Image (cartoon, rainbow, N blue to C red; front, side):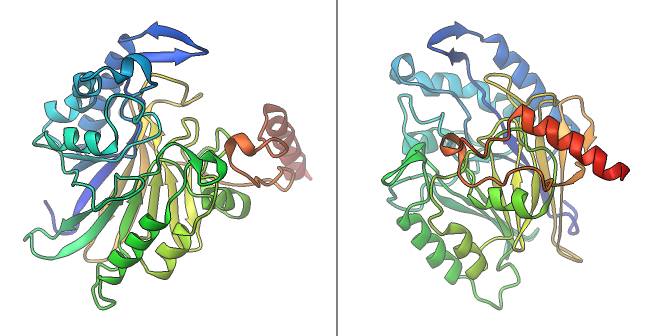
Amino acid sequence: MENSRLFSLLILIWAQIPVKVTQNLLLFINYKDVQTQAAMKAILQAETPDLVVSSGDNLFTNGGVYETPGWYASHYQSFVQPMIDLNIPWAITTGNHDIHGDLDQVGISSLDRSYSLSRTLPPAGDFILDFNYILPIYDNAGTDIQYRLWFLDTGDLQCGDVYGYNCFRQDQINWVKEESAKIADSDPSKGRGMMIFHITLQQFMDLINENEYYGRVGEIICCQAQDTGMFKVIKDYKTVDWVACGHDHDSDFYGYYKGIGLSYGRKTGYTHYGPKKLQHGARVFEIQISPTYEIKTWIRNEDGSIENQTKTKRSIFTPKLKECCEAVTPYSISKKNVIQTRALDKIIKKS
């Protein structure tokens, strides 16, 4: 591995599942697994990354048959097989669709770590939401940490007393503070890292409301129901300079908010909805450590092409998002709003 290109990693956002539940209708669609595996292999062969990362929703679980002992383990092989076939290591966290089967977060972590190519580490402690760990990336000599991948658990629903998607809890925030404080200010790796989790921060809404961004906002931002302070912590403690999330199948944008890179992946899997009018793919990060520290990102499509995303800024005629996902009614980006916005933008450009 060249010194100037420490490693690249693929952020894969997929729903790699053998069954699909749609409006209480159970359909067997194992062929979707075949399509997903083909897409994964095509992307991996085109990129040959040093590490594959999943931000969650590795399998789909929904109680019932999914709670049968051994279900998750018996289907997990289809998720990891493309990496095994190409001898590429990976690391994961879990999403809201992973955890309604026969294994909880701790069980999924243990299962994943049973594979020799897994770089997933055990949970760092006893948390309300358990799947939290730091994966250090060392220099070529294997002595000094150059970069850190922080994997965090965002659970499923119910953020304290607030209905909506789950949120970071105080024990996770305290852990991030403590671990960040252990890195000396004189350490050149301080602040160089990526935090990876499934359900986005509310700052993703702030980004598209206030700043330029690259890529597509394809649906309402289904972020955490409360801002419990994680974004402020990673800024104040210089924890990471990038955040990578999944969860929203039709969005793949990235941008910078208050100096922190915020990014979605691109949905990889074929089960469940999305990505609408886009190829299945994955977000790629190339992290260069020396001679200068630099991060580049792009989308690798399943047909092998690279998609360098175009820059966008919210139109002044588009209502700002105020709340996350299901709580959003008056601020929804409806098809009508999008059409009106595009028409008005064309009028402005001509004037």
